Amino acid sequence: MFNIRVYGILINEQKQVLVSDEYIRGNYYTKFCGGGLEKGEGTIDCLKREFMEEMNLPVEVTAHLYTTDFYQQSAFNPDHQIISIYYIVKPLAPIAVALRTKIFDFDEAQLEVYNKSGETETFRFIDWDDFSEASVTLPIDKIVAKTIKEQL
Image (cartoon, rainbow, N blue to C red):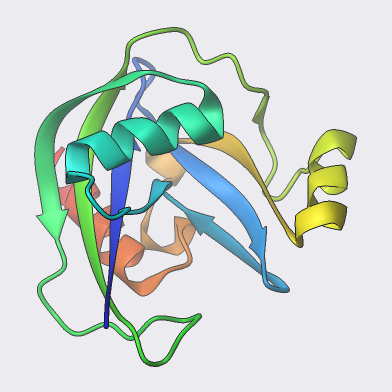
């Protein structure tokens, strides 16, 4: 079974990279913004939907950056193979959600979401000079982080 994931790389004018800090199924992850492709949805529509759902942020997809070119087993379901597609995006409105400066800095409302669903997330920018493969958790994200630093 394939699990297709679509992520957006947003780099602001200060050359900072947007990431999502998440607590999912008892583990902490820092990853790029995005999520799972739904049936009947194209990858770009998926990414636009994910940014609206997670950040209430309309985005424009400006370029394709990377698609997984190796086997990656899902961390959550060993029967699934992950295929991840990464695009460069730019915001079409100011970012209105609270942005954090520290990793996994969840506020009370986010902790309430966690108490109801077992998952929560928050967002922050990482300065370009501090951004690297070590900034993100997931194996494919690490490859993309390296690609970003080399190509952008």
